[in-house]
Length: 156
Image 1 (cartoon, helix red, strand yellow):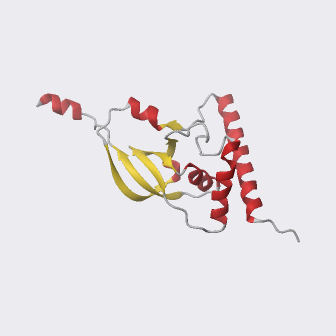
Image 2: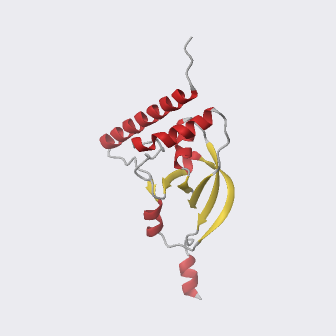
Image 3: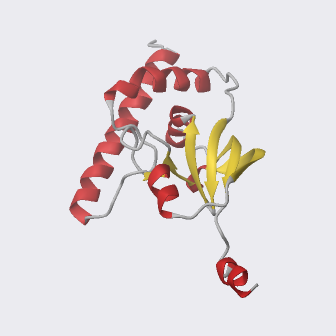
């Protein structure tokens, strides 16, 4: 009887995830639809900001995590890994999942209904690849002016 080690399972998961990213990029190219993560830095530069504040620990739907602060080229829009240099860290996180080792919450920025990863890219990627729907996260909300707020100030 052949037994598969946790390590081999984790490496196989990484290969499958990278293969999915490759296919998603290829389909993206054919359909001319973007498969890149959104850049937090670019989004924040384009929006006026009213500062930020820590919300605290929350359970966040993984499908609402759409971008990154600084790692936009390492993962695709669904957080499948694109770069081979992510393998060792990705596999170590996958091994922890198989061993049911509790992992710390990820750190996210929140703008409106969207979340951007500050720390925990590999944890998000492994969770998505394993079909997880929610994740614990320390969330910092980035405030943006509400519609009409500027006009109220001007009226005063």
